Image 1 (cartoon, rainbow, N blue to C red):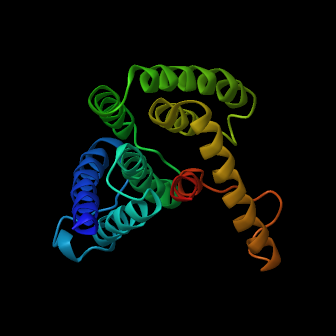
Image 2 (cartoon, helix red, strand yellow):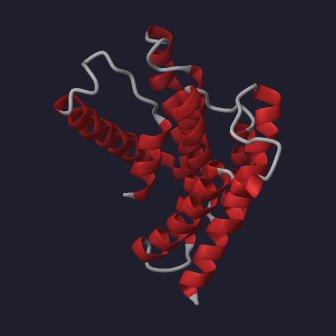
Image 3 (cartoon, rainbow, N blue to C red):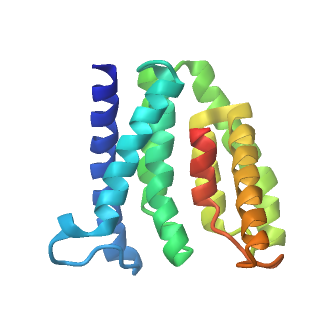
Length: 204
């Protein structure tokens, strides 16, 4: 029963993500969906199956349908669609940041405590200050979209959660980069999208 609820929650969140991506596609110029037969398109099934798998994985990792499960599901629901556009277009749709920011706020109010909300605000400020400085110095390597994504994630997971998430994402990126170097499919100057590695960090 618990796993069925987790799977259903993942699929429902995946459907919401598809709606957001469709709206973002109209506003921001990238193309993930064709107009005909959307149910046959790869992106639709990646999102739905991906979020369903996230639900099953997270309910097992967090040992039940509780606060931590809900928080990590929202985080994955935010990062999965961003990962798709980041990999394909190196673009992070602006529409997803305020929508998920509002969901994170509602989650804090209805499922968390004032301490969780305070931690989220502190995490957002710290992320904005430190990684905002990185963005100003290295805009070509760390874009504004990456900064917005990490600030929104920081609001949900707080401090030190955002530090753990960022560190795990960097470790995943380093491992992947090392494998690509060994396979001679990349060099030391190759740049990678950030969102997919943050998603991996959220699942670890």
